[in-house]
Length: 157
Image (tube, rainbow, N blue to C red; front, side, top):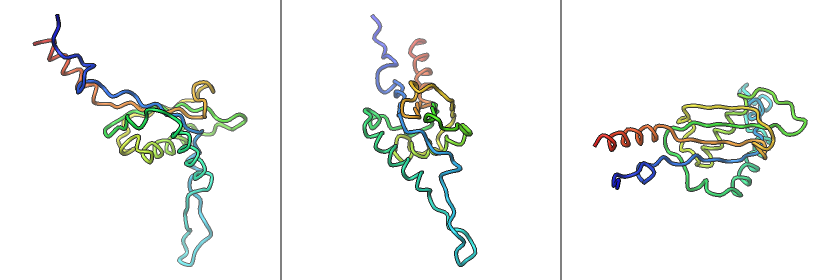
């Protein structure tokens, strides 16, 4: 009978991936707007109304999903962003959609800070793979490496 702890047991287990569905994100080119020149000669920059609407829709959609509040990540992570543009929408540049998604993950406290993102993979997918336009899979990294080291130590003992 093996009495050594399993790597599936706390504190050695790896936190599960966090999977979140969001609306199709706006392009980074559409997030900020500039107003007319003010007295100082510079332009006033503000968040675009369409970006504010997207954030509100993303908040509402997130609240309908279960489990994400129990899986907040504080350390390094990888993000897989699956995108499916709305019917008839021109795709544009895939990479222009990433910033809005990562900023949202931080704002919703799914991740502590988007600067901890060590790897991003973004791809166009079919509608069933991102039913609301965007599916994000956030995976903690670094933790599994420690679990592997501890597992090897147990096996050697």
